[in-house]
Image 1: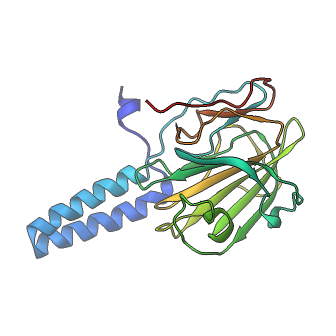
Image 2: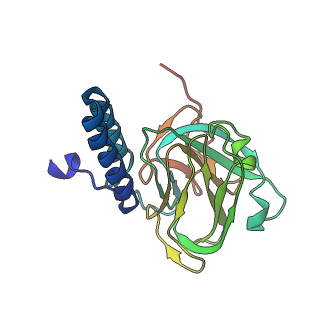
Length: 228
């Protein structure tokens, strides 16, 4: 039970939590009602940087969500040019993370990191598809253990101002492994071969490191969904 309640905090978050806490103490000294607002903000900051345990499905062919959030798009798109994956469209699944989602990013498919590329950009609303092209981003290209290459892109959002990526080129990574985070609202895109079947649905909420969003081996057609 304690493991479920006492969720770990990502190391990158402690300095922000400390800053929020100090500001709250100052606000209490200035005017008590402001201090309570500062305390609420400190609690939110602690909540934002939570890093919960996840149980990752490991069957061959499965593609696991790289982030918590809302699936906002599924369709063909050309990968970022800086990854040098060619001009052909791949299947892109876009996941929007609001400020209340877990912001830890996880590896969707195990393999070897063959290219990393950071590109500065704008900070438009990350729920819009144009954010994939215009916003600040960190692009990761992975050669999967089965051969095909995929890409996972960390994209800054309207209020995000910092992308953290903790992997390097040449590193072997495992499905579900943590590899970074984006601070305060963002988007994560994954590009995969067009013959891999998406299992996620637009409008579905997914859990990073747990939700299966595609399958490279299934013959099942792309799923359709109904809102109840």
